[in-house]
Every structure is written in structure tokens, then in C-alpha cells.
Image (cartoon, rainbow, N blue to C red; front, side):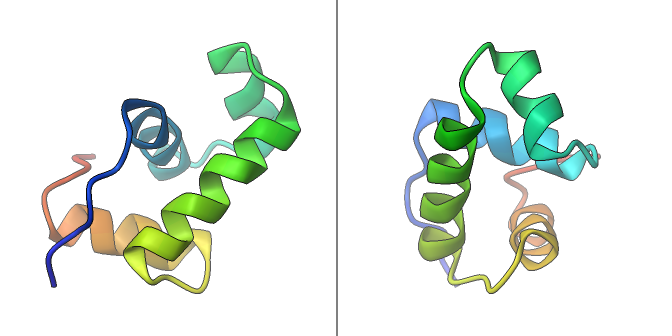
Amino acid sequence: MDIPALTNRELEVLRLMAEGKNNKQISTNLSIAESTVRFHISHILNKLEASDRTQAVITAIKQGVVNL
């Protein structure tokens, strides 16, 4: 599966998700609202065809988008 292009901000959110951060921690880290984090996560899940955060992170790791 080819991963559709993620925006730079989506990649930042995805990397923080891979570190195990929750929405509040991501919002604090990136200085954005939690609602904006949820918006980005929704787009990430759609683009990666993932049903949840864990599946999205696993897919990104397998595709080399995120490194732990």
C-alpha cells in the first residue's frame, strides 16, 4: 500500500502519536488546540485507511514514514 501524501503537520502529529502522546500532550507540544489535533488525526486515519491511532502508527512504521 502506498501512503498518500501527509502534510508536514500531519507527519508531526503522527510522529507524536507514535511516541505515545495523547491529544492534550500533542496540542501542548505543537501549540495548537486539541480540536485541531483531532482534525489532523481524522485526516491521518482517512489517508492511511486506519480504524484507530494504533493501526495508523503501525502502518506508518511499516511504510518507513515514522521511525521509533
